[in-house]
Image (cartoon, rainbow, N blue to C red; front, top):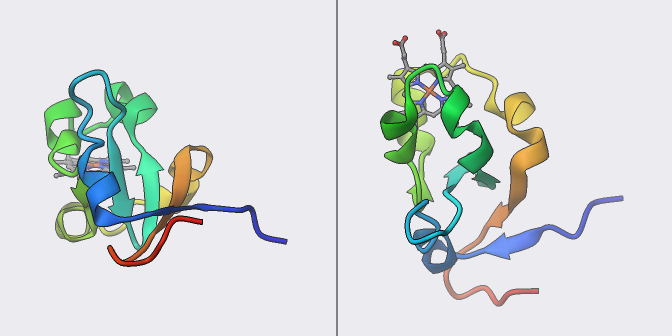
Length: 90
Ligand code: HEM
């Protein structure tokens, strides 16, 4: 019984930088999260977290704090799944 997750392509993700009135999204481990609500709470600060906005943040995240359980922390902010560019939205 899976939720009908939004399929997010890299170009869709790229628009979600947190600027121009848009929410900030990042991809972690193949999942896409809206990190906007978490920005003020990030212990490493907003600018650090925003480095991952609009792109796949998995590498940055893993370099800094691989022990942090983002899946639990951001569960309610999950947007969908990161898919290849050519995969159609459904
Ligand atoms: C610290 C969460 C992304 C940079 C932390 C801590 C948490 C956290 C819980 C405290 C960790 C600890 O003390 O053991 C998250 C979550 C993220 C995220 C849920 C999901 C997107 C990032 C990204 C970066 C980053 C993408 C960098 C580009 C940092 C830094 C600290 C930190 C530098 C250390 C702050 C300090 O100890 O002074 N983050 N983080 N984080 N985070 Fe993140």
